[in-house]
Image (tube, rainbow, N blue to C red; front, side, top):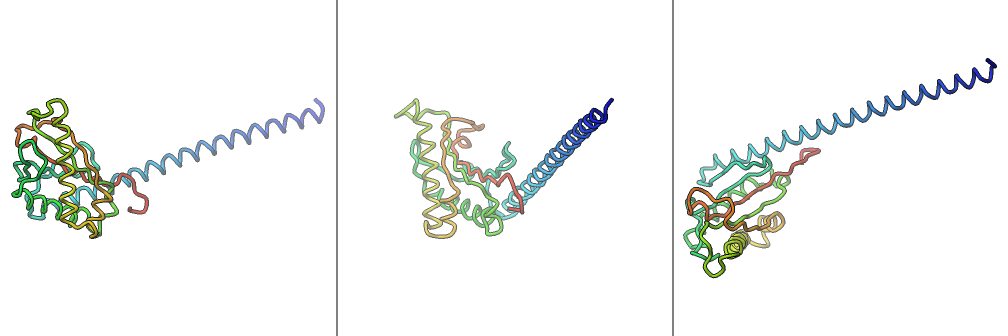
Length: 213
């Protein structure tokens, strides 16, 4: 074998070794990157769960009669306003009854004093207000009446909150920024009609964190 052939083989071996080394380093880098992302995600979920637990405890220890329910989504704090807890609407109407207004004020007070306080406002992603009806169809529109009615009730609850907090106040601006409405009609019926006729406040805590926010 000539010297040139030996040199060519050495160059090929060296090149192959360098390729293998670079491939190995790339695999190690990707694995470290995946582990880093998983660690950040786990830390974010842990922080999120701690915030949700802290806010739920704050609501329960506030001395209020708010009805707090667990949601299948761990990022959500759910407050229920039904006829049992004192939030009522006129039959087949979206207007809030006068006796229900103090209860709604209490809900908004606790949302913004506990959940959306200066300490936690940066942790909140959204506030969804969802309306529901019982399974009895609305006579004027048996097909879509309940869906429309539940949407109107959710909107009325949002409008009430904006009026109560003040559109130009800090809390009112937060509500306007974070809130959305939805109507589910006869979906997700509860054990009784009084419980089924309700609005739900679903406060979603942000899912991802980097520096704590």
